[in-house]
Length: 235
Image 1 (cartoon, helix red, strand yellow):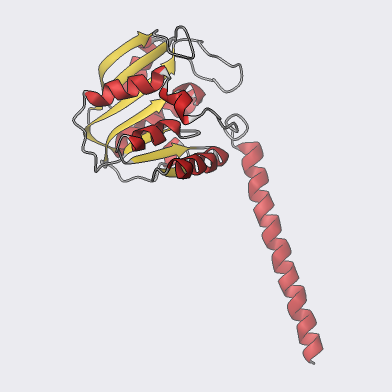
Image 2: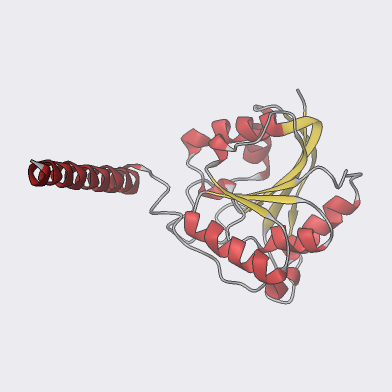
């Protein structure tokens, strides 16, 4: 009797394990084949923190923050952080920072680098439209080299979700390539001029404080070609 019950138990347990494995891999397979971003955004940048410190993007970020009266108790949000270097550099400056990226491997790598640097940055693996932050909670966010990776049909939802987490009067700093600059033929799917970018943000609840093209160079590149956009949540 006992041996019979044991065989039944082991059979049921084995079947449950098989079912859990099927469920696990079916989720992975569905995501792999039907999430249009998973194949496109499966890269992890491997630049050192010092490399990023000498990049124009970090200089622009510091210049912008210097002109804002930010409460350091409210986290800054780095949207599309990838390896997390900009988040880590801000944490070194004494800011609380939350880094967000759709790529789980990038988030894992960013967490590892932050630990090595001794910086308590919070990294979250999610898409922009599912940012798990309260509405009206953030005073400043930045999004560098991200919009060009978002399909046109998803741009408005992404901008609206970012607007919703910003406080009224909160600021958003955006950098995107001008036109087809830096187009890698794979991950870039949206392209912008000053006017098309201005139209997008104004249609989704932002006022434009500044828009222009930054062509300054740095230690890595003689000249860049980036649209810089500083926004304020309008409603």
